[in-house]
Amino acid sequence: MRETITRRQFLAGVGLTLAVASTPAGIRCFARGEADTSSEIFRPSAWFSITPDNQITVFVCKSEMGQGIHTALPILVAEELEAEWSQVQIRQAPVTEEYVAPVQGSQMTYGSTSIRHLYDPLRKAAAGREMLVQAAAQEWHVPTHECEASHGQVHHRSSGRTLSYGELCVAASALPIPKKPRLKQKSEFKIMGTSVPRLYIPAKVSGQAQFGIDTFAPQMLYGAVARPPAYGAHVRSYDQQAAYAIPGVRWVGEIDRGIGVCADTPDASWKAREALQVQWDKKGVQSDLSTEKVDRLLIQSLDMPGASARHDGDVPAALAQAHKLVQVEYLLPYLSHVPMEPMNCTAHVRADGCDVWVGTQGQTQALKKTAQITGLDSEQIQIHTTYLGGGFGRRVKTDFLEEAVELSKATGKPVKVIWTREEDIQYDAYRPGNSHRITGALNEQGRLIAWSHKVAAPSIIATIAPQAPPVDGPAVTGITELQYEIPNVSVEYVRVKTPIPVHFWRSVGDSHNGFSVESFMDEMAHASGKDPLEFRLQHLKHNPRAYRTLEVVAEKADWGKSLPAERAQGVASYPSHGSYISQIAEVSVDDKTGQIRVHRVICAVDWRPHHQSR
Image 1: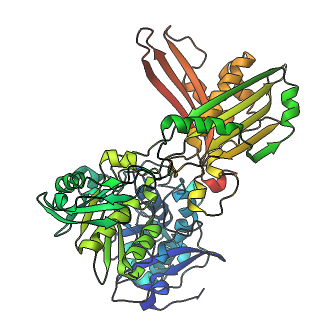
Image 2: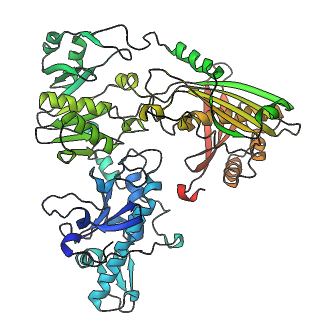
Image 3: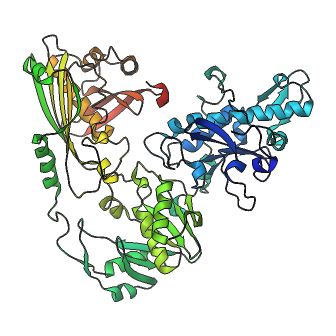
């Protein structure tokens, strides 16, 4: 890394701009000029900038879908800068190499990793604080150690003089970047760990926040696609003229995913799609597929040999010596993501460029797919990431984007594709259906001495990696890391093959494995004759984080105390994504109607950054 850089290389217009990147040599700071020396095109390559109007702009490369990341990430920068929260504004980062997140090597929001992947890089922007202090010290001709950054200003302690960051940013930009800026200690934090207003709340309240579905462009058409009713079915015929007879229809034709229609209004496009009367061949792939057939396949797959995902101790011997044996099977369905905002995308393909407005979790893949369809260079394509009305993993996929880009390319007009809720469910990539067979063994003292767990499910990894490993990681997550102390544990995975597309679904395998593991813990507690809370604590003495969450939630829920006659409490505890979570639900069941009512749920969470959780 160079000790100094030129003023022109450091300045982005006017102001101080820093970026932090992860390299094979570790974390390094660099100025905009090191990544982009062009002054004609504004393509910021920095995580934040400070301008003479005393505004701090944080560029966020992660997608905001309600999880608060457009506030959580700027907090890291504001904390290390000693900035006022009122100074901070956010801007969605462009899809360029400068904003590829460390670790994952792409611009993508998934797996609860935004803070984990960017915690260190954004805090390294503390170099900016030290440069601002140094600039103030030079202005006042005093030693740097006599100056202090606080509340968006640099103060000279002995004289009481102050300069705002806006007043200092130009001078600071000419200084060398510290190689190892001092990061604040936890005891010094002023913003992190406190409740601050989310930065996007005013825009959402006023209606100014732009979601993908809010995008409009001049001369824009609305696109709809008639897709196969069965996996692998192909078009035999369709009535193009009937579709054109619908007022407002401008284009009808085949695209990769079906028959496309473009019209002046969404209603016209949907009516024209119906008028197509597409005839599909009956073959497809497993055209007789049904829920019942898939359920049978999942259960029958438990009798097939599986790949070992974990093997501790001697499970067969422990089962043979058991004082009590319990075996259960669970069947869990395919689930659609169903975010509040259905899938949608607006694209405008031109001969010399393309703009795509989309609520996406996978900007890098969106850019790649757009380039493949249009034949344009990535530099000619702008992916405009909007707010997401829910994602849950679904918006990593690009199927809805591909339709908008293809239709725009065919028509030469901006095209917005909006899926109906029915389409959203029918053509989703689902959480895999799965089945479980669990066998548990208790000794005479009521302790678990063996746990045998077989999971049968489609492989998510196999859909994205041609050479998928024998064990699908998402399918067995949380089981292979079983939090309970059991000397003999075996986990097997059986891959189930169906044409039904599967994909990551919020919390992925933990969503079904948490259910199966904790349901079985209740079965084993019942078999042992012990209280389900006591039974869990008995097997968590080696795990203080999980143990403590159960203690806290039991205390807050008044576990063990008398309840109204019609009420009962249930408890569960489970680790996920570096956190430990325990919950107690208080419910009642109407004897006459069978209706279940949840009166309250008490939750205790032990969360910490992933790099601190081991």
